[in-house]
Image 1 (cartoon, rainbow, N blue to C red):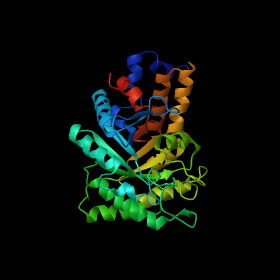
Image 2: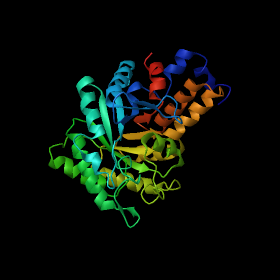
Image 3: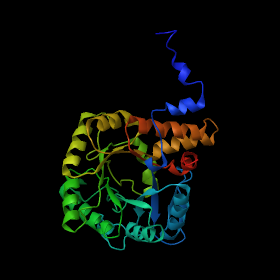
Image 4: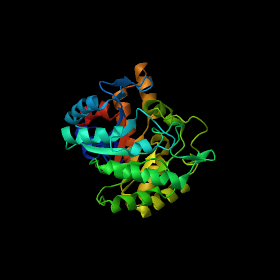
Length: 323
């Protein structure tokens, strides 16, 4: 009790503050999302996401090499193909854009940990995450395409796949198909609690995946629901997910914390495009200390229970973390 107990005693000295710090944000906690575009010599800026670009494979190699030398050792790939189709089956092609990127990256930067997003929204003409039947995404047909896409990516030497579609049962179907083709060691990071969020709008510009009609509320989660997230996570774990993810991160810290506290499985969180853009916009106006705000945001996500954080801020903050 005061005056004998004074918690400020542990705050007066910077070395002591560091010694008693409870949450440590480390470089190996961070994953950088990357957008791969067809063609050569392509570096398309994303106007709403300053500092983020679509890269063709040749320039992606140079950018990932630069990031790797800075200390970014893991990337998550999203593809923008030259041609789309109604079902997203172009994502299953052996020479698909992400497949090409993985092969090139593993050749030139073999120690870079490459994760591939598994979904159809970037590959369908309509921008939804699967095959449309009667005006909505057909769950079971889509799962078959996702499994084919996963095997195709596995054949390239990808280090991990990350299904982001939110179809029911897709983790089990993908796991079974991977194992049947000899890829039983390939881990799956499941987008388990992916909410139908307004924070995704800028990503859809970057990935050119805006739905041509309707929305994604029939398969992505209601932001008001917490217990449902636990059901989704539990099902994915039973189906074979090695890591579960919460997306977005900042408005769902309670979900991250609850999942991390409930299940003995690694938890990932996606610090998404809208969250990134708000910080960048405020920084451009000179309203905030950008570096300290990024550190505070990412630390809060880790403090909530995330083992790994997918963030566009990774490239901005990695030098600070590796000092």
